[in-house]
Image 1 (cartoon, rainbow over the protein chains, first blue to last red):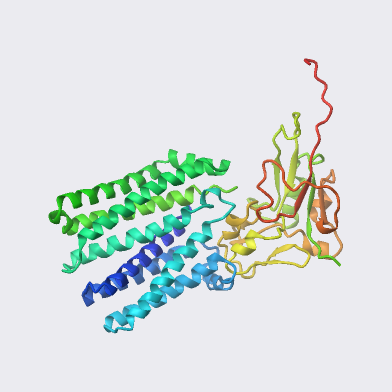
Image 2: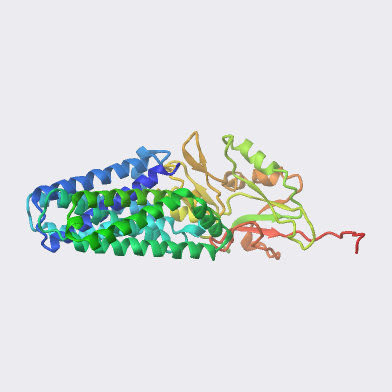
Length: 272
Length: 187
């Protein structure tokens, strides 16, 4: 588990970005999320985002010189990620303040923050899309990082809204969304393993490693469990859909699945 | 005058895999026990068509498109006019992204300084008109450091059991072994 700083950083940063984009989306759709709930979620984004950054510093030999990582922006994806993510956090703070003041300027800032957040996820994925690591030299880093962003944010936000009794949320459409994302992720994972098996020896070794690893299977099973739970909710209707404990359990499952999946991502990065 | 492109030429037939180059470099640069700037790789025994034992030594290939330089967030790598890729530890934060990006795993992490380290082609020795340590040490003369732009020998740029050198335009060339005459009684 020697890549735990990066596992924590990538999952939490993508969680923060997904959460923010969901909130901004709901704001645009006039979901009338209450002031206090919005404050809580914005603070959560900042805290989770900051925890992610602090975890990432443990990956460095010289964390106190991390500011130097801004130097190579025009060449290095890692430098770009540092710049964009720092911008994202700063903009979230601005947006949070504007939310708190109920200012309409937050809409424009929300657009910009969401865009910067997406560019951050893209930059993070490009760091790993390297010819030197065949298991990562394909669509997988991009797709899996965006999937993390797409699943954790909305599920978390809706769990919070459910607990805070926000009247205007439509949990049914959220469950449909979760079902599509988790089903898509499972199909894409099968496609990824197939791609690896058609590749160079290091890619095949990565596929063998994944298939033989129990953490990979537990992560997949959790993902599948999330899909089944959404199916149950949609089948049973309002009673289950509106149940705040149910969506919280669903969030816990997808969060765990994401951590296990990210752990397997780093472990399977077999170098040429 | 054409630009210089400094790189390695490895006489694979001469290399016996003794690791003298690796050890001499390690000793000269006082590297930590777990670090090495050079690696010895064995070719498959079928490389020449007949059973042959052959090796080659490699360090940093001072690539045309260095993956380390591109990956580094702090601009710790620079490529000199003569092609040598230099790591300056001043800004290095030990993120190891260069090691991940390099197809040849040339940069290694120094656990004492907590920064990266790699073969420098002994550029300061070259600048003073001296040979790199590995070249000087090799008892069989298996390692050459040349200006590849001025070298018109027929040299191979790919070798088995080694990553594709075209990924980054690696400046390492090989003179491959040939099969020796083998006397067989069963034919």
